[in-house]
Length: 220
Image 1 (cartoon, rainbow, N blue to C red):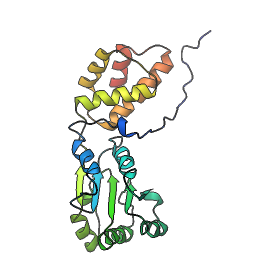
Image 2: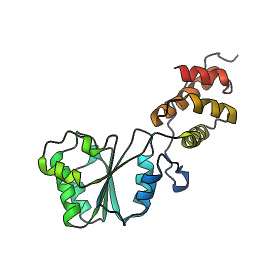
Image 3: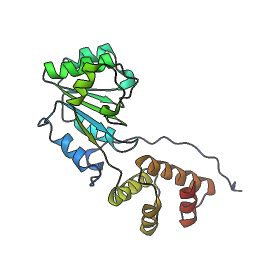
């Protein structure tokens, strides 16, 4: 006998950052073009910002393949990272926030300027909005090129929904996709969470996704 409410397993899905899987739209075209025009950057330091799931890490991965670089998440950044950077052309720091040492960041920016290297920093907010204290660091930040990924347009929302559903081996009618696009919040994180809700509801009910399931997920 089938249990009406099936047990749910919170599966983890791998992020496969393939170049061909990066979906371009008016929301991210400028950021994508900037990454791909390296080394013809007008600044040595680029700050790429955007909300969670907006594709910053995907672009960083694309950039990483183009360069001789070291990539590190901000919470794992150490003095050893700085030493390793001196032997590389490019440094990528992902998910930088205001907990990051101002002295360390200032040191990195000095290395970039003095040794003609390149730096890509990803963050949720632009660096010029951070509450930095060191005057010299603030001055250095003013000399960075800051570019953001905008909220997704209809075409990108469609592509993201298809991608996330495909990752979970879920197929739904195109008309239902169009229904979702007209009603979902234009937020990368909300889109991802919506798919997570759809997946859980589908597993719980043991039925294919229909309009009723979509409405329930949107309401939550």
